[in-house]
Image (cartoon, rainbow, N blue to C red):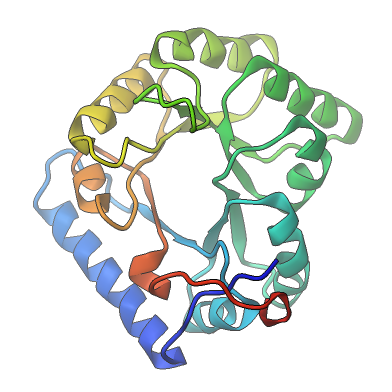
Length: 237
């Protein structure tokens, strides 16, 4: 894979993540619905090992990746060197990648259909392990995005939790780019409350403060930390 984001220096990454954390603290102070200690997931898709290690050495331990294959190239070594690191899958998961994903990721945020849930349950039954899971809700009903439609979310959540006994911890969403995000965050929050789900993965670089105002317990931030993403050579990974 020929991708890696340009980084202006180790110090810049550390400064950027501290600025994001400061913005999070301000958003929390200004909202009555904000979670007390929301999690910051540093989105390291297309980012090489060296910039990730900068943050690991800086003390940040929670990262998100979009693709199983890319994560499999980077993270076994990183996790061996930093065993306290936690990895979230925030991209779509195909059923034929469940075995690899379930062993590599600590949290899978993109469960969105019965077939995938059943494959995760089968893997758990055979191997005795299963990452924490979030149900992704496609609040904008966008065909190019993963996620269960809002009107089908309740039945999928119920099936995963009651029938399959999967460790569903909460919900995740990605609002449409040009939409008012608060409407989407409010919808997901309402679904989570119906099912007494504690985790809400909502908000990215452009809207995480709004998400925090709607009770997000984790936000997924990439470009505000690592800078603009540009293609690079595979051997930079």
